[in-house]
Length: 135
Image (cartoon, rainbow, N blue to C red; front, side):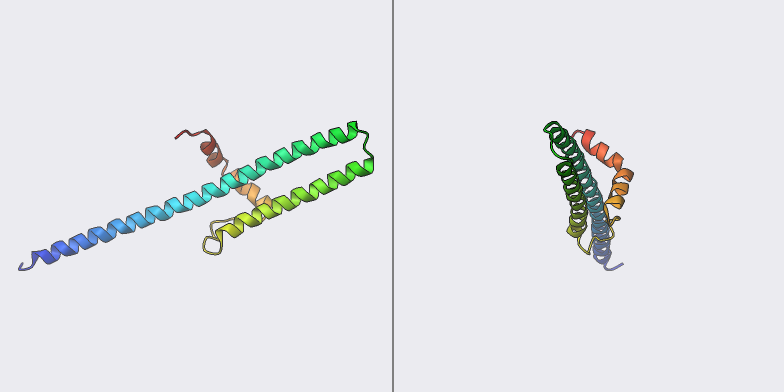
């Protein structure tokens, strides 16, 4: 063995490239986990805001009935409210999907509100962990 330094150099290069490979794979795994968590938390926040919309609707309807509003005004309010909620749902899901773009399109597994709620329901443990874990 006339050139042991060559083998030391090769061993160093192998270790260095292996370290970078594992670092890269770990970074990819963590990035995908972050994308999943961000989707779940976003959908959770949107779902909670829709609950508040529902409470606001019921309160407004109660006030309208107490104020002796006409049945036509009440039904017009309900119809407009439902249209706004549907628009909000559709637009929210579209924005989430468009945010990830074509590069991460495989990460988003839903295309509409119903699919998004199935995804949220399947990942409710993630939401619970996010809301309850400290630090």
